Length: 264
Ligand SMILES: N[C@@H](CCC(=O)N[C@@H](CS)C(=O)NCC(=O)O)C(=O)O
Image 1 (tube, rainbow, N blue to C red):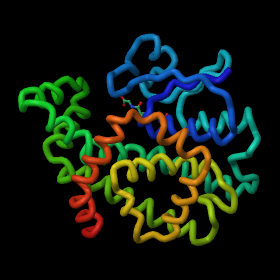
Image 2: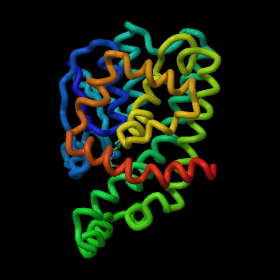
Image 3: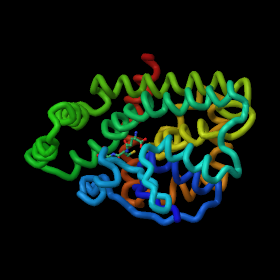
């Protein structure tokens, strides 16, 4: 029995859902609404002490970390294989999954918050309530960043860094995709899985134009959208209201994002 503790808009959880769908596996959903703080429930913390989603439970075995989840599923359910057999291509795949975890993932929260969530907070709260939302974050470093994103939006220095990181990702993806159809070589792999939720996030933020200058990325994303795993793993779990606010707020922020892309 496979059980996934996940949330609809979580990019990390989406990676694991893609693998479950690509392998056509039966799995049970345990929804953890991280936007409501459910990741801090003591029962969940016992499974995942990092208080994040996803967490995969296979029979009585608990596996945390989305990239580890993906490799674990590929080990236990080897068909269809999602890792290249060639050691060099496998190394390339791992360099991409590592890069997504270490570089793109943190910048995705920055972009999403600065381009979208801040508008939802500012539109629906009085200045005093906004202040309370900032103050409720206990960790002082996280609190300072949240304040910056809410108050400055895409003018925040970290938001500029996020746009740069996404641009670097586009440039490097375009280069490797000029040489072969998928990120790590001739076959679809966990590197493609890892990147898909992040381009999908840009798309949900009405920012598909991010890759208009990168024809190989555009073609790759078109092929990703055509895969049967795309809709069930990346779209169907996102609550309608959240999808709507990402689309509307993202569109409001696109002008500034475009300006930052141009400035480089
Ligand atoms: N390295 C972890 C990162 C997990 C992560 O950051 N999950 C986010 C959603 S994509 C989360 O649960 N955030 C809740 C929080 O930070 O409070 C993984 O890949 O599983």
